[in-house]
Image (cartoon, rainbow, N blue to C red; front, side, top):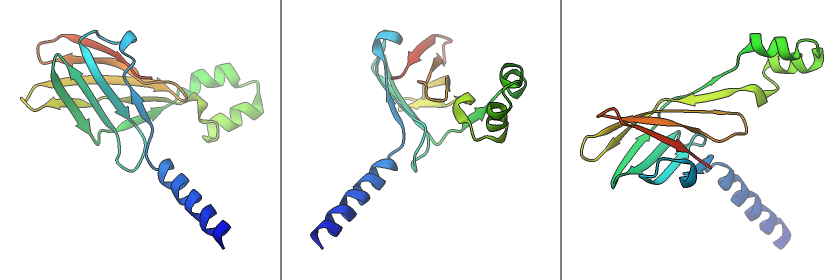
Amino acid sequence: MKTRIAVSAWLATFALAGCAGHMHNLAQEDSDRDLTVGRFQHEGPEGASMVLEWRGARFEARGFAIERNQNLAKLQRRYGTDRRHWDRISSGMDTDHYVYSAEPILRAGNGATLRCHAAWQAMAIPQGHCVTDEGTYINFRFE
């Protein structure tokens, strides 16, 4: 009985941890030097979210869309002769070739905005840039 309870507790903990989503933190050495904090989440029940602190202001966006695309024509040229691999790609079973992107608009408490663009391949890290209301570009990369 104790073993069954312990296993059930372990499975419940594992299941809850799996629902937390995929969170990335800012890679400060590869990002704009005025960015001090950054988080990007693109999976999980809470939906997508992005937070950046830039020059002392905290900018946030939640619930924005994540697009998933793949260039099938390019992939067919590359893998078309390997029929088995091509069949897995074209059927959607091989997801390693997807490219993901998002264009969140982050807002600060003072009304300022950052219009951002992030992109990443499957199994890779999000990176991109934001543009301030004044037109300043801010580069970021997450880990």
